[in-house]
Image (cartoon, rainbow, N blue to C red; front, side):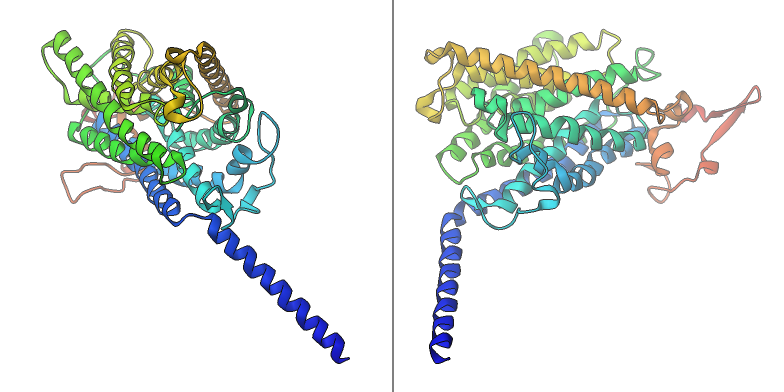
Length: 456
């Protein structure tokens, strides 16, 4: 009996020792420095979505400011929750070359165990912030006319059917990553993806009722500048954090994120001045964003001097696409396609030109003898653009069979703030006021109920 007790004690002690050893090994695999940097980066990227709310909110008319900002803020909830429930598993589950499986649904098996040198749970949260802002980016193409409820349904479906599979293709062990496509922080996954969706959404919903009939001017340019500044600040986590470590690649991405938008800003300013003899604040803010978009896929793959060159180049196509778009019937309200789609395409393609294995330890680009890399980049951009555009069309048309997606002209005249939220961003009284449907100001003209002219 004593021998059995002794043997059992020895076995329990051995099991405890193995458990303690395993825990120590796991803790040793997790780097404190890398974890700290990723915690900061995750918070920085999350901040980018409220920053986007200010950037977009300042660009619209005052009667739609609150609704436009809410389209970004609500993505924090919808996209964030769905990412934890199933989106992360679709993007980073084992699955196959085209999508992950559901093995990590509801964060099953996602805990504090190492994922590289950071806890798995932290990696999930960091990637979740990308899913959130990508969905919010699309809202800029449909502001001032898309019903809020329909928008919620759209970003939920789009996040699961479009964003998560594309993230798997590139970063989750899917076919584009295996092919050798380079996308350091989301040139294709985030920006080309959102840009294509924005273009198709703008076409499907059609133009605003006042588009082409009156000037649709930004109501608060300081908001636009504030949003651009906060986006730049958050982008250091977006790109620098994508190194997934506090190492030399993070430093490279960080510095490139400082330099490329600076170059875009200079070139954009010169283009503005040559064309109109004026340098606009909205143009400066837009140039910053375009530079940030363009450097995103290349941040950890090219040298700082090439980052400056890329930033300068990126200004040109986006600038002229924006000026072309305003003369067409395409009402991509806040130029999501020109800034994010065109900027993302430019950055992804030039990653295939400027990439240097001496810098990134991964692959050379065209300038360093690897002609095929440019072709791979072009393929990745084209496939993501086509898939996102097609799926966005299918989702919106499918939604139209079951619900009203677009606001009616009367609602557009009143403004989406009152119609969708019963609140106003600005008031001459005591601040934002909750208005019920029967309290909306109207006038009667020829027996018809119409919005008050001052609100139209």
